[in-house]
Image 1 (tube, rainbow, N blue to C red):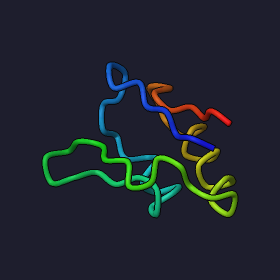
Image 2 (tube, rainbow, N blue to C red):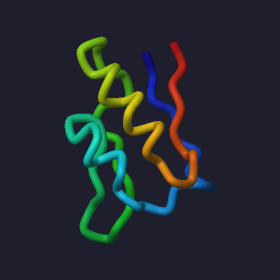
Image 3 (cartoon, one colour):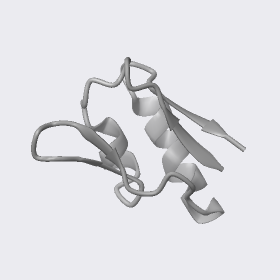
Image 4 (tube, one colour):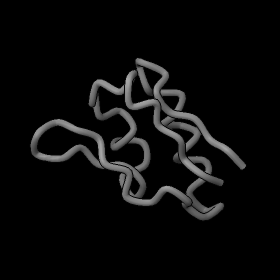
Length: 63
């Protein structure tokens, strides 16, 4: 699984960080950082929740 971010859509709301803090974080400037672009299957549910929670639909998965 690979996390994809549409950087043109991301506004740094941070909902992804709440859902999957081992995969996403918001830095001190309010910008998204992907900590793990290829998380293991144990993170799938959290990443899928992060995708659903993103208000700008900037996140997706590729298998």
